[in-house]
Length: 226
Image 1 (cartoon, rainbow, N blue to C red):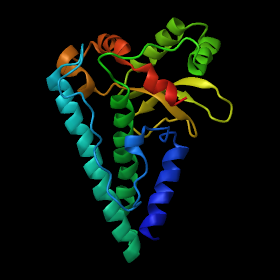
Image 2 (tube, helix red, strand yellow; image 1 turned 45 degrees about the horizontal axis):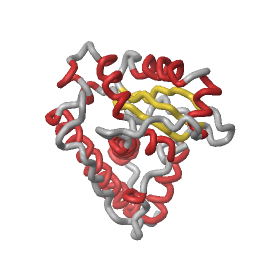
Image 3 (tube, rainbow, N blue to C red; image 1 turned 90 degrees about the horizontal axis):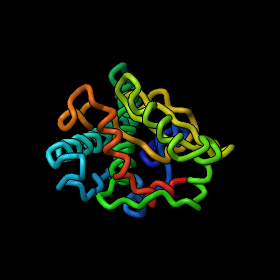
């Protein structure tokens, strides 16, 4: 398989798993589909209210690791396919790609929507109307979303949309790539791996971290994904 075809196949698979919502122009598809992914710049190095500079600095470094490993795995898999190799190691690399690529993309969605001076939910926006219709009120939805984010386990809390019906759902993404409702589009994601909060909040205060995230969500960004 040519590299162009490989990347096209991977992109289609990622969309099927619900990890390809609208991203801003900075993450538009490169003109060369064979180009490496580049870490996106996020103005978070100085910290945010409730999220320290040190913790966010470590988190951004982890994100860059996902980008680097995604690129390395794509190169290895392309070489294996060109040589006709389908060994156990190649198969494991293909499985690993789902973890690394999804980790890269989820972190981009998460960081992209965090702001010090975040835009409030737009009361007349179709997304807010859909939340109102589905849960009765924004507060009721947030309570259910927070409960999702504080489930036992490591992963992500997410608000996703079924593009076939328009239905909104709160979802739990186990690790990065598991338990995702296939075909849905993530509208909002919150990282609840321990590295996202333990440095500031300790191992048993995830709920306080989720509370701290709430006022940092830029609904101007999130609503564009709907």
